Length: 452
Ligand SMILES: NC(=O)C1=CN([C@@H]2O[C@H](COP(=O)(O)OP(=O)(O)OC[C@H]3O[C@@H](n4cnc5c(N)ncnc54)[C@H](OP(=O)(O)O)[C@@H]3O)[C@@H](O)[C@H]2O)C=CC1
Ligand SMILES: O=C(O)CCC(=O)C(=O)O
Image 1 (tube, helix red, strand yellow):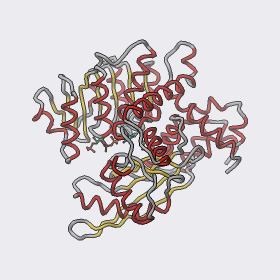
Image 2 (image 1 turned 180 degrees about the vertical axis):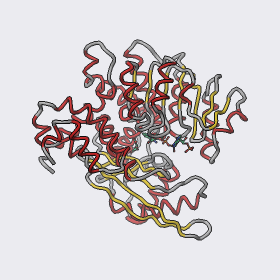
Image 3 (image 1 turned 60 degrees about the horizontal axis):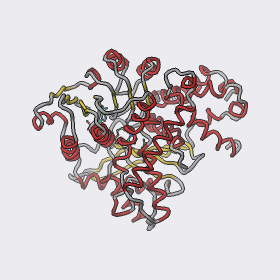
Image 4 (image 1 turned 90 degrees about the vertical axis):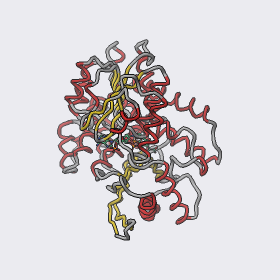
């Protein structure tokens, strides 16, 4: 590839598009990082001569495999599994597994790419990876889930290890699936080791890992508000999703004195003007874990209304937290939020804003935290789970809570430090700060290794 790829952004992106046809999500993620990093690397020959950004934009390897399993009727089902090992310059590949029918190579490549920068931001020694399957767990029995997970791990086990690649959960992969995956790894290898995170407490898991992503996002939000001498107390939030990240973000937001107005699933959203408090969140968690849908919420809590087929972004609020999936917040949604004078958008999900929406939010001057910074609390506590496993010990809940809080505060500080506008008293460009800070850390290690 031509040297000019690293001095001319449009030529660079053209190359990325050509090498990754029909991979829109991956191209979108690379474009965002490249746009910010290009400014930073101009005139720094060590980066351009060594094609660092170009090498980061090409996964180290992609493993793809067949997953055959037997359903409850005795019929054989075939799905596809993947692990994208994006970059291990600063530590073993690390990132979740997603089981969802929308999973394909482009989605996993974007997630593994984002994970590389996110993990660097945590300050912990973790490279970036992501994996999963197009398997749809919805409506499947517990035994079917178990057989699928066992078959998935029967192939994956040969590609992972505590110093090689350490998967965890993501959409459709929670503590039940992690149990089945780890159980199969242990059975095949006869090794009891920290090869996955998000494990149950009985077999090497860490306190507060389930809570960490959502809580961490709210800690990041609190830091952004502090920067403007403001806080969460008395603020209203619109949150999307009703899974792990959304419910824990809602829980922490409410605990810190805010009022959560909405939660959602892929069918629609609930609007509860009285606020979705801890008790209501506990109901949502139990209801959705048993396969229930958000449409049932108003039957339980009469203060709420349900909006079928809609996303929550038109609801008037101070703060928006997209916590469901990629590209869930489009340009019209961004406009609606800004028309309603939202003061902050804090991403719990990975790349939830479309390219147009992200551009509009960045240019608006509101506080806008990208997922790779704001949702890094989950993988950070996964990193702490790896440390606990390696030391064969467990830390107390309070210790871990303090560590999560201080990691999120440090990530916020890294973003501010690397966001040039901040120094001129302007709005802090958290997206740029996160991209440049993550890039610098990974690039430093890559330069030390020479051309590999
Ligand atoms: N779990 C973690 O530790 C981390 C997760 N993340 C990111 O956070 C996001 C949510 O993950 P998590 O909470 O773990 O996943 P869960 O599977 O626990 O929950 C996902 C939620 O999002 C909803 N959702 C999924 N797809 C869509 C869609 N296309 N449109 C609208 N709603 C949708 C689901 O609704 P439905 O039931 O209808 O599908 C569900 O409510 C993802 O982007 C993930 O990558 C980031 C960092 C760490
Ligand atoms: O805990 C982990 O390793 C994975 C978390 C994750 O998938 C993410 O940060 O998107």
